[in-house]
Image (cartoon, rainbow, N blue to C red):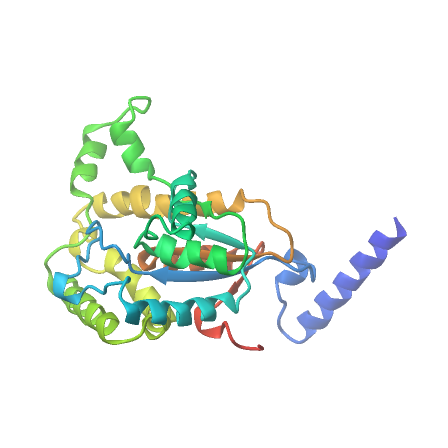
Length: 291
């Protein structure tokens, strides 16, 4: 009992000293000087270009990740990320990742190419480079899709309507400006190294503006609430679900989580991780600081 009184007294002393100085760090209460797992969020474009995102890269602007040049650049990128020393690698994949590890074993045996996707070219290669034995698939679907397609949910004409339209994108001036930005970025990636492109893509402002595409102009600015409702039940919900999937992974205080997802996810995930006292975020551009 005495040790708890002493601990409380120390916390109270810190509290009142900070209060006297006009500020209190909430983590005095929420983390209590405990170490928490560190998180490196890495936003990527999809190396295999499935064409499922709002921005579909023109054929002429796509990189060939299998080329000798890009494979050499990939080694530079992997070396940079590996300096974070991840202990767990979390990918934009469902919970069943056996197809990735099977492909990895076939690749190591010289029987198959490693898949072109960033999940394999970055996630699986890092697993190999760091001598880890698994990767974690933490992606998820969205409530809006569940309600629309799952017969166990009761849908409504309103839900069906916003599901069909999604209320994302549009052809107004700001969405057209976003298309110009996406085209610039595609060409930047084509003419710069992978590491240069990832540093740009994962800078704070670029990540924030990526999320801005969902809420600036376009169909989001619907006359009534269809736009906000669709965004909250689809994109925001999907990211909240996958964040919860990450929380379900058992971690130790010295774990270092690498979270590799499409760049459009990262601004939301960054906000969630920075708000939670359970984790400490390391910015992509700060990986080598203190090394």
